[in-house]
Length: 452
Image 1 (cartoon, one colour):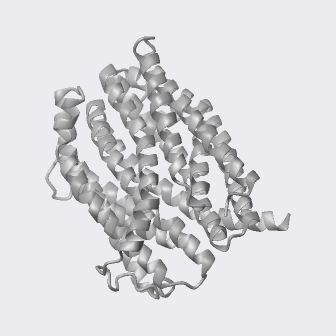
Image 2 (tube, helix red, strand yellow):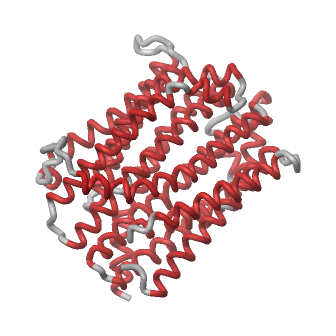
Image 3 (tube, one colour):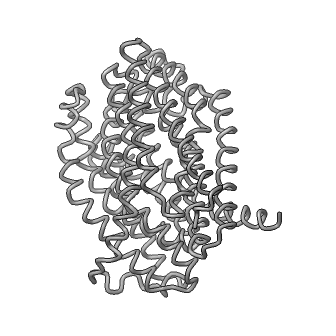
């Protein structure tokens, strides 16, 4: 039992700063919507369209650079004092991010045309395009920050990532307040200002964490900026081989939520604005199991590098138990206090926001139903990444999110006339299927001794 307690302590100590950092990241995104909400529901709806399109590529890129975490953790398990191999992984992950970002920028520049092709309202598509022309440049610095955060997380020293994230929140708020509304001598740029504020805060994140890594003696010894442009094809291929399935998996997951936003846009402005608010609240809840999954990748990965079957199993099962335990508490909060949560985004007493608030409250009731499934799939994917199992989770994501999630949601929303509630029920079904498949795969591998 002492081994289980020791592992639980190590997992929680690693997960807490990661969770807090994830919440800080979500808070940065939430402040953008909160500021746009002061301009009205139409600005929130346009912002939701742009942010969902941006997030589709951002999350894909984050999945790609996530490869650094299990690669570094496994190397630490194999050789605890390794320096050169860790540096190789960071270098090649940053280069992979750059290769991804260049074509992604070209896609995001066409935001308005893409949204019009999807059938969105022209005025919302135009405003979303304005926001994107400021936001898209945040992609590269944020992926650079994520790579560095994965590096310090795999070293089990994630604290500085949290500190920089927390510092970025007021930077984003002040920049957004100034550039959206024209304060502090800045021009009032509206939605374009919101996008530029996010780019500034992302640049602050990368520069801040890089400065810490170059100064702190615990990180300085890796000399991450040394020989950065040196070719390393073998490690570059490893990053893509492990990271691309993760990126596609996260792409399937994120794009199903993005597709649900676009479907909401076909239903109406109120439904789209309510969906944006409910998704933001659910995303804040998701940051906890996401952080537990990230910590589990490191703990499982270190044990995997040592080829310690028992330690791999302990880390994985503890992460799943802790993640689903939190999800039960989150579900209770969503069921008991939905109006309080929604009121942070809209004045629920204002009759003009009445329908939007009512829809958001209804969506949160369904979000409460899928909290356990969402936590299980997030942590399940994390523990499987620790043993570098990324291909089958990608297939599970395709089947669960797009075949089940979108299929059921579209059927309920349109032919069966459940509108927005139907889309949310479809999301719940998709998450449930993916969670079952991932936990079943982990259980099978543990039972058959296939983890190392």
